Image (cartoon, rainbow, N blue to C red):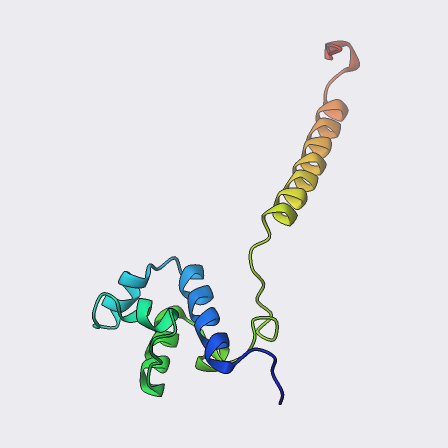
Length: 117
């Protein structure tokens, strides 16, 4: 399989993604691994790579399969959080819910009790 991105870079990016998804700081993950406080910082910066056994431990803490660190995020069906798409979808859902609530209120209330806006 040919990849445009070096495997080490894919690993570092995935580690950072899954760590952040788990809401863990680099220091906290290092502590959970019983390693130096800068251990994950060193890995994510590209200064070092962990042994396979450590990758397995990291995967267990982050609740992912170890292979997820070696595949581009798109293959893992993971996407980065898109704030604009989220806000757009949330607005649409809120508008739809508000419309349904108003329709229900209109159906239940007598028309004389409704005050025009």
